[in-house]
Length: 375
Figure: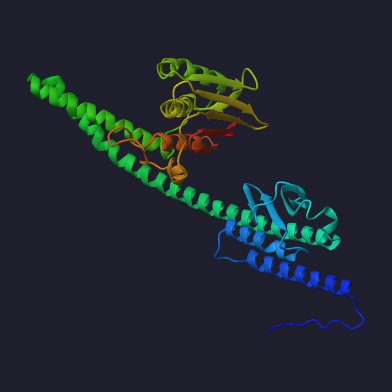
């Protein structure tokens, strides 16, 4: 059904034009609001449709060009002239500017005098509507991220219980294998039998190390907490890994806000964490790059950040790297327990570990540990 606006006989043409402009503005606001709630379209498609629609609400739509910059998105309704005049409005969320929207007219065909004051008010309303769209999207993204993190933590908790059970079940038979292998080595004189028994023992020892990693992941190994210098642990790890850095032609950089930060922790386990992350960083880094280690004290916690300039971790596997048995290495070159062990140790210390990575630019692991365990 079409709604017609009846123009009073005494209304002059300028009044008619103004009324026509108001109708265009109200139609634009309605259509933008409708587009904002289109659930079957992507965020960028919605923004582009809004940008394409807005010029029709201006006094000279054939000359108007809408330009929108918000977050990482930059969109235009069409190519604008090199020389133009414009009216612009910031887009804000919680008093923070996140972008802008502007309408351009070509110069000298049009000038700033061609913009109506009512269009300035319309542009402000449109900026508020776009801010609302962005805010809703970010809220949805945060909600989805929270759900994913919750599900991931739940999976890791279940895996921890499973791996703890597996580790306990394997310990007894492995102990028997090692014991009987040692008896063979002590009593046998046949060279071939001795060689075979030694292979059995080596394999059992290797298996026991994997079991130990499983127990680290599931937090089943007891911690021996003591106050130690985190700076000293990092310095010792960097010193021991110096040949690896030199062989790979990679620089190590260590930054600390203070010379000595005392943290209550298990020095053996945290050293294992530092070693694991540094070795992974070395393997991921190209020649002539740097790996930095930073210690940043907080009020009741301390941050340990290890950053490389390597190839990065693809987004599709980023959430899986702390899961046990997940590895990107070829079969036989990794058990997939390295980062899961790191996760287990940090969790046992009531800490957190986060990863930030950009493909082709590097990866950063941030560990936050309490200064005191509160045992």
